[in-house]
Image 1 (cartoon, rainbow, N blue to C red):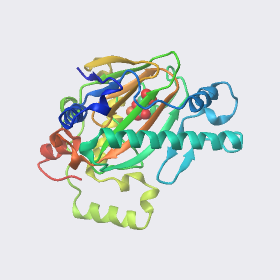
Image 2: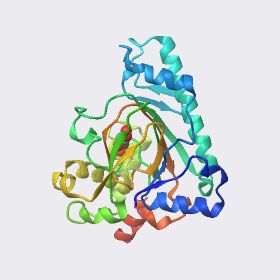
Image 3: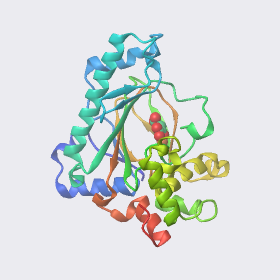
Length: 305
Ligand SMILES: O=C(O)CCC(=O)C(=O)O
Ligand SMILES: [Fe+2]
């Protein structure tokens, strides 16, 4: 089964063997689910986050926190109260720290071979959001970030449903290893290493910062493929209508973690979630062969990252 429940107290007392088996499941495409979060949010922070509903300030939108620069974005500084912005910044910084420290202790086999990516606060109702197709999160997709190539590292996301009473409703599909055959080689060509001219062109673009203007120039063949897969999945209505899937409801007060570049997922409803993203070195996996980069390199017969 793709959702694997772990009692909130178990991570503390688990031995190495147990932890490695959880990592294996996660890497192969299970969602590790904590029906009660092992990282409780301080009550004051929770009250503040849930209070964002009533205010007319523009703290409403999806808010991102960038730990490497200690920066908050998604807040309209002009209309939001400075005290609220400062408070939000503090709450998000604390959240990001608490998840990193939990996973440092929990995911011992990875030895922190990750980059701490953005954290986000998602205060909007997910049901019925009106977004362009590639930005819709209610269509099954694997994640790829348009401007942040991972070069084969994996996208691990840790979520919290902080809504006091409502579930967060997801649909999940079959993991990369199984679903990829639906798309390659007919709908998407198997990636190949860039030739010398393209590689040199991208290097020049990166060195001269031109790549900041054209995100595609930041991407090697792996990230280009993953971006196309994300778009193709969302745009493929036959796939959306007929693929193997399972509905999952994450309880209020629960947490879950999943490799979102491996597991197709969509959110159909729910409000108020927190999330922290990690980019994990695919070289430290317990099961290296489960990584999309390993699967694609095997298909291509060549190195891609
Ligand atoms: O907010 C969620 O529950 C998941 C949305 C999603 O698919 C994403 O952020 O990539
Ligand atoms: Fe996603």
